Length: 73
Image (cartoon, rainbow, N blue to C red; front, side, top):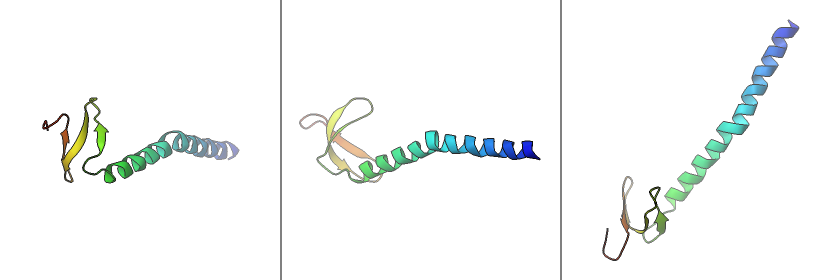
């Protein structure tokens, strides 16, 4: 019976470690990203994942148009 209890304690400890090292930071990062995306507006300067610099020309819920140079969208 004592070995079973220790096994449960180890499993709980392992889950707690995984939560604090993997799951919680991911949730914080997701929340920060969502906050940043909801605060974007027309005229903001952004850099895409591909490294393209531009200003937001127009946007809707699913798509954003960037102005990467004068009159280039």
